[in-house]
Amino acid sequence: MSFLKRRISVSVWELLVLLVLAIAFATVDRLYFSRAVTLTQVCERFETMQNSETADMFAKLEGDAADARNEINRLCQVRRPMQQ
Image (cartoon, helix red, strand yellow):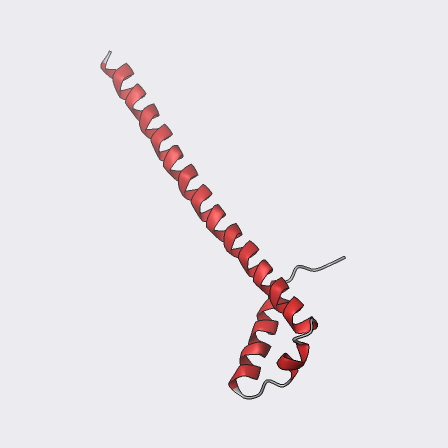
């Protein structure tokens, strides 16, 4: 009888550990994909702003602002998926 109690206890612990791992994986997965979607939306919005009626404003940027714009464009190009 003692063996059976110990065996059930081990099974319960295994299930609890598996549950904790599943929750951790789901949390990490959700955080990663929500950030990826947000970055994609920001890049799309930034591209729209550069190609709209405000495009001349972006063309006239100089100094730190131009460096920031170039950095944003570089990050968005790296993030953008390959299109086939």
